[in-house]
Length: 130
Image 1 (tube, rainbow, N blue to C red):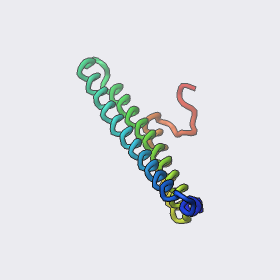
Image 2 (cartoon, rainbow, N blue to C red):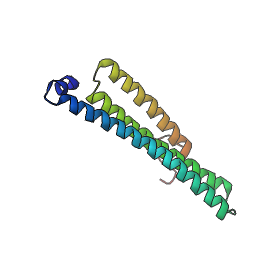
Image 3 (cartoon, one colour):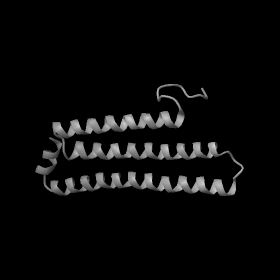
Image 4 (tube, one colour):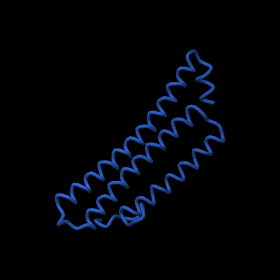
């Protein structure tokens, strides 16, 4: 519906093209964040291992795992945003909305699994500091 309104207006194709470019840019941002965070986390882990060998391996590994998990969570959230932009603005059909719902469900499950792995608790449980 929204797609038809935009496409029927003057310059609508240009607007749809810009929305597609924006969605693609958001996806690229998510990938860049994930890849950069992996390299940063691995470099930090390696530097700590080389320059602070007396520190506990378990502590360093826990920090690496948490850092990688947080970057994956951020990347997943940004990918969901790109999917929402693309689906709502460009492909607002029942099938595309159903696919979006399935993607959001899968990514939400992955996010919860990452939170459990990083923090050792379900997202709705209070943190251990509380």
